[in-house]
Length: 328
Image (cartoon, rainbow, N blue to C red; front, side):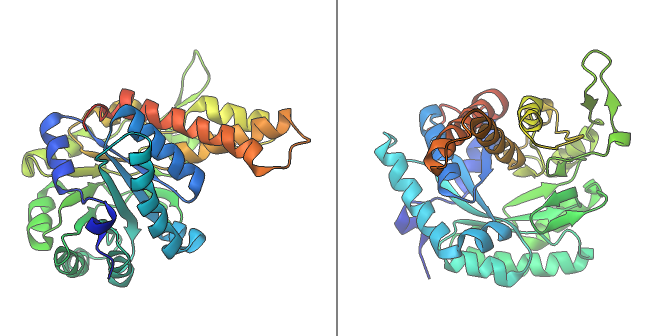
């Protein structure tokens, strides 16, 4: 058993309380490798923002659970080295699909986990969510659960259609599970292809696809049922079209990639998950660099601009979308 507090991590409890009271959202950035982690920590330190380092089940399989845990420990020390004496960094499991996966992460030093039983029958979702919560709370690890299903694809998480969260269920669900935060579905979607072209309209001036409106009425109803309770939005990447254009101009084939409009982050939601935008920023920078420097083969030559591109994107999200800057 690894005690996350001994390696300098924090859970989300106080972080979310401050965000709810302050009217801003905490950035939850997924990472799979060193460059992503470096960019996230650099951005968080420069903007004086708390941050959640998110690890999906797929990322654990890709990068190795032990290495990821030590990378998170290194992230705390790296933030201090960069001039932040008391960084607020959470190591969070994104979309844990079983009690066993959540338990493994808790035992490995994660300070927060998500159990996603949203595709299960309601009572089964409650039962396993409660099991995760009871184990996690023994070690002061916070738990995010999900009610409602997001469409799209992200690592092993996939669904053809979304099912909005039912506001009438949230009090019962939160009470019986004892979860610390609740991920809801209001029409956001995983991945870079969040909506099918037929779901969108076309902007007559730019010719770009415009995503359908989100169900903010559902969000407002949930907030009325659970005032002050931490609410989470998944699938909230904006999918910057300039990054998509760079990728496509340099040999890529991302067609009809559409993201979530920025105003989705302007509500009282206190945690916003962002993954696809980081992938796009990294891929665009690498493709552009390789197209301009076909003789380069040292990974540092193309990963450095990729890291800078991601850092720029993270800073933009923190300052202009989430408002979590200057909160340390």
